[in-house]
Image (tube, rainbow, N blue to C red; front, side, top):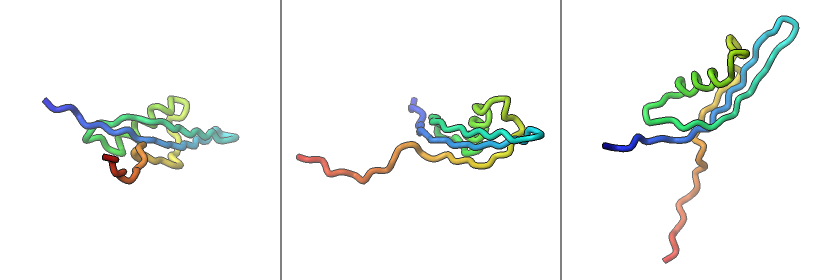
Length: 79
């Protein structure tokens, strides 16, 4: 049996919702671990759910889902 492959993502979602006389805006910044086969649509759905019921029906102003790990160049191992 093989272990599922996972990767951590940084998800940023900004929502805006009209409130009659004004506007409500919310930005969610979270990390989430996704399994192999996960999709950006799945991460967006997760983030919308995390935003809570107060922001239901909002317009999506910004969405980003990128690997959280920073790429570092390979370093030579001292021998």
